[in-house]
Image (cartoon, rainbow, N blue to C red; front, top):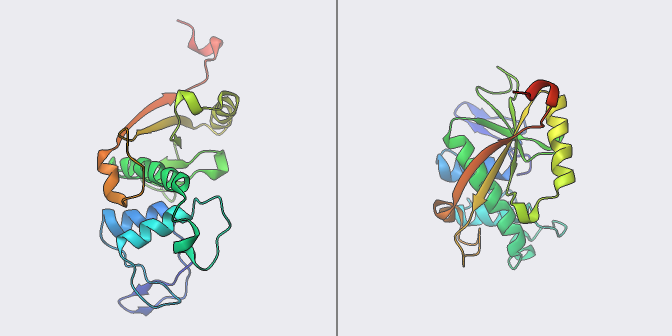
Length: 193
C-alpha cells in the first residue's frame, strides 16, 4: 500500500512505512496486528475492503481515487493477487521472511532471518503452470538467480475448479493447494555422476 504514518504508543511517527499489498493483508488478517485507515475518509477498513483494494493494486487499469469501483469486475487482477497472496501466506507460515523480488525478475525473495541478518537464499516465482509458462523467460530468471547465487523456487498455487479466485477475500486461500519445487540449471561439469 502507499506510504502511511505509523502510530506508536509514544505518539505519531512521521517516518513513512511502505508495505506491499500481501504484507498488509497478512498483518491485518493473518496476524491481526494491523489497522488500516483510509486517510481521506478517516474510517477503518475491514478485511474485505483491504482485500478489494489489494486486488486493485494488480489491476491492469490505471489507479485513481475511487479504487472500489475501479476494479470490481476485474477478476483477472483478483486472481493474480489471490495467487500471490496464497504463495506469500504459505512462505510466511513456513517461517520465511518474504520481500519483493522484482530486482531479480521474480515475485519474492525469501530470507531465513531477514535482510539485516543474512542474504536471501531463494527467489520465488509464484502462479506458474506448464500451460502458461514462458520457458525462455523462465530460463532467463534461472540464469539471473545463478549469477546472484540464489536458488529459484517455483511456488505453484492450485485453486479448486469452478471457483473464481480472490473474490471472497482472504478466506478463499484455505481452499487452495500450495506446493514448491526447486529449479536449477544443469551444468554438465558440475552435475555429472
